[in-house]
Image 1: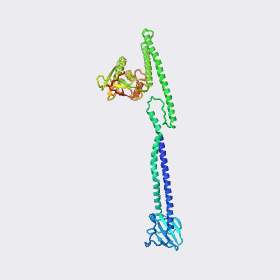
Image 2 (image 1 turned 90 degrees about the vertical axis):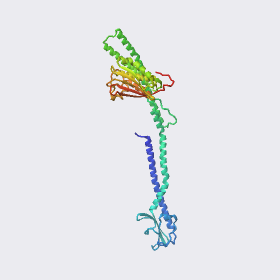
Image 3 (image 1 turned 120 degrees about the vertical axis):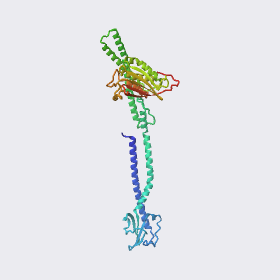
Length: 454
């Protein structure tokens, strides 16, 4: 994946490093050329300024001319008379052959020498100097010139890092604002004066997309709610008419046929009720929590579904683990109606998928400041490959038993998501059945003077 930050930093730093390298190379060669010109001028100046009475063959019987600091530059002086005889040569220096007047470069041993010769009235003067001296001086000049550049490069790199980070900060802020949003939050992004002009079209396009998504989502929720509401009343009336006709004998038919018709009507009514519940949950993305008694909600849910359990000969019960007192209310911060729907759907789903003579247990659990509950049944369980899909809407496994619409666990997942709860499904170990665990409810201090709601 392409990164704008890495792309900018890479090219800026590479370009700066390349430009610095080219500048350093040019500075070194410029210093070298300037040093060469300086030493050529030095050689010419020495040759023209030597005294006319300078003579001797460098045997120690004469004194070298006072060259000042130039003696450190390893300058070799040679003088010939008109007859071509060497009359002066610097001490402890190699002897060069007489070269033509002007500047020349010769090789002597392992060194290259730069020379300058001048023909005067009664003598010929030749001055030589090693090229390495010029190279050393050029290097020193280059280093003296390049050290500000060596300091400037890292400072500029740090400045580039800061500027790029500052320039891309609005994109990072926009990403964080979107990543921290709830999945149900479709409100437009708010623009302020800190948003750059370049990012404004992107923000406006996102806001337009969010607005269209909000409109489509609202239309879907409205349709489901209206359809479920409109279907619920006619279906309830149809069921009553079917029961009345069956009692007074106006509806004739085999008993099994009437039972199947009534079963289909009950299933449609249950589906409509689930659709209406799901639409309501989708319409309330934000959960307002209050202290509620999870134990009282569990007792009410078990009581409401006890008749269904009795008709199926299923043992339905409520257990408490980790209770602080015998009458511990398991007070938690939650939305009362949502928790009632969540627990009711789990118990209803467990009863519908448990065979006759089975068992369904609701187990309240407390672990420190967190409270949760398990709904355990003795049914056939769910194949491991389908555990991740059972929360999808309208999904029913290939081995699913009993009546159902495929929306029960989807509603449970939606409510758990609104409450930011953990939800897990696992098959019982060593025995048949399924365990649905809900955890993460925040326990409320039982001693606080607040009214409990269910």
